[in-house]
Amino acid sequence: MRPGLALGSVLLLLTAGTVAAVPGRAVTLPERMADTGGGTQLITAEAPGTGSATGSVTWWDRRRDGRWVAAGSAAARFGANGLTEGGSRKQGTLTTPTGLYGLPYAFGTSNAAAWTDYPYRRVTEQSWWCQDNGSDAYNRWVEGLPADCRAAESEHLVTYATQYARALVIGFNYDRPVRGRGAGIFLHVNGRGATAGCVSVPDAAMRRILAWVQPGRRPHIAIGTASGPTAVTRY
Image 1 (tube, rainbow, N blue to C red):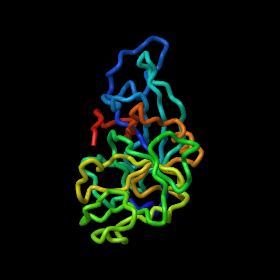
Image 2 (cartoon, one colour; image 1 turned 90 degrees about the vertical axis):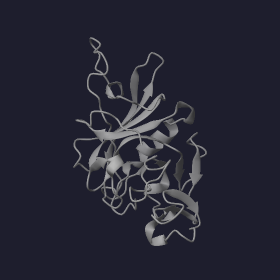
Image 3 (cartoon, rainbow, N blue to C red; image 1 turned 45 degrees about the vertical axis):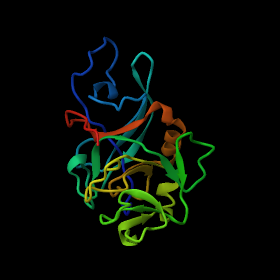
Image 4 (cartoon, helix red, strand yellow; image 1 turned 180 degrees about the horizontal axis):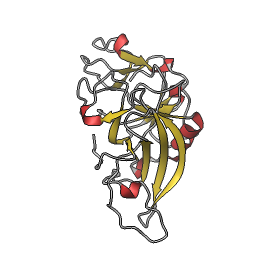
């Protein structure tokens, strides 16, 4: 989504009663989820309700004993119109899609070699994210716009130097894109306010997340609200 406003935060989908209570220890959010993606790193983006444009992001490590431990957290921003269920989201609604998603790769306008081990693409003057529903490159990074992808329906990534200084692609509508559902959903640095559908955090938090995330640990992001839905849906 074109980040015309600001960039926003994430929340995860919960399932009550999936973990037995341990005396003296609070059950963590990942332990209450139906699905965490199967890896040992998880980012949760939580909003107070579906109409909220703010919330929090927490990143978690899973220990060998199965316990999830928070590695850090930050205030977050979501879409200007709050959150909506990922499977029925419509492009252009300024909403952040709920669900459980992979994180295909990181990108940014700066050289990340010194501060992340994650697969990383450097933004250039030719870097675009195609959001044109009529294009074969819909919801994909392109170096130079294809003939069937209109500039007015795409993001020229270098234009958003603040937001895209450091970012992670969120795998919403990515593996098998559905036209009209939405394109260009990222976890990135805050802009001036709410986002157009992304999740955003302060720059210092984004730096910490990219230093922490490791591809071999199969990280995912879960976006949702504290009250539900009652099961995490993968998209």
